[in-house]
Length: 357
Length: 143
Image 1 (cartoon, chains in turn green, blue):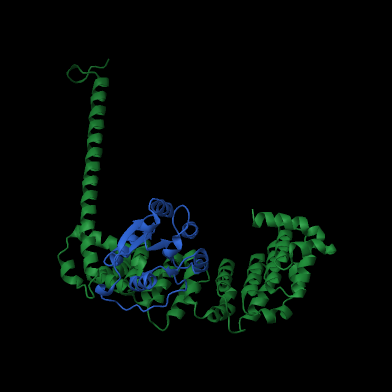
Image 2 (cartoon, one colour):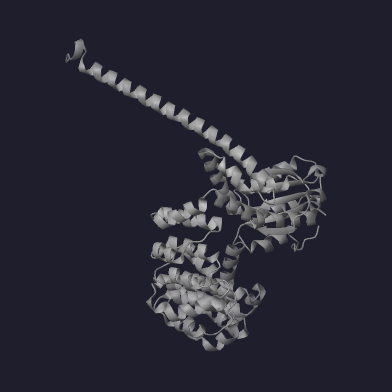
């Protein structure tokens, strides 16, 4: 053994040090745990107190938040802010207005605006989120400056813009979401849908004139957003959509077919689309979309084309689509009785088993 | 119960004019919704809350029909079975047609209204909720 201090060997010293470290770690952990528990209990108690006063004042027509807010300490303000964040998400009408006024009194509007002005990505996103909750606004030039090129920030900025009353919301929102030509986030697609909810023809016209430089994913996304609208009043974008049926991307072609099937141009389209060519498209996705289109139309010529496809489609997945589309217009017994399409009955049974397990 | 969608005034009413003694059951997994609805409604009604559909069914099964709430506010999107399925189960129970049910749905779920009315809802309201409007719809259904 190595004799070191006062006769203690090295191993013993290491053991003492280890035990000391272990003891201090345990003490620290337990201490932090107790501190966290106490702090949480205190916070829960404070939240309950604050919530009681909040609801009591909310019943008043004019809550007069100022004097109460001025008396709150930091913990109480923090608890109130957390409650406010939850409640602002779920209410509308008079209670929303009162809660937003409370947020103003707490200084949250200025705090959120500062986050957008001066913060990095996460702070800007949080600031935009809070401004939307509070019914606030911020200069559009700042939104364009901070958010352009960041899909999630762009979506959040557009959602904030939409609740304002500026006359150029549509222009600025479109610039944010579509100006760069890059794909949208999921929230961006939702924001775009709501931005043009009252003017779907406007989005169709914009896409028709600006999409040449777009990323193909963005083009697909905009077509999907257009598909969500049920009605278009004008025909101005229709030629552009029809031209996309020659697009190199099968995904775009299929998306356009689905859009055309759901729009309000059905009567015109039957004479303007080269359906025979779509039925011969090399892409299974395009042929499946075409079967859905024919089913949506449902006229005798379309049903006849579906009958033919149900017999001749070479891809099994697409054949199931054709059979399913045909079943929307012919009963099972009719399909079994018609000699020329009787062979598809087995496919029909398989389709039925999937649809109604 | 009038099953047509409400088209009601959202004027505030004097609490003294409110119907009294009725019991409302709020079923929603969102604590903020439960708290906000409770704050608004407990001045005029006895309010009970449950966090999910299964708890709601257990509560109803534990009560004789004469003790059932007068009206249920039922969220659609909840953990476990969704509100529409719970609504169907409730309506399949004998005697439940006297109980008003207002379905609460999140934004972007407009199609759910059709499902809700088909399942037996008396009214349908979307989040975010105008509490004044909801109060008016409840008064109309309980009248």
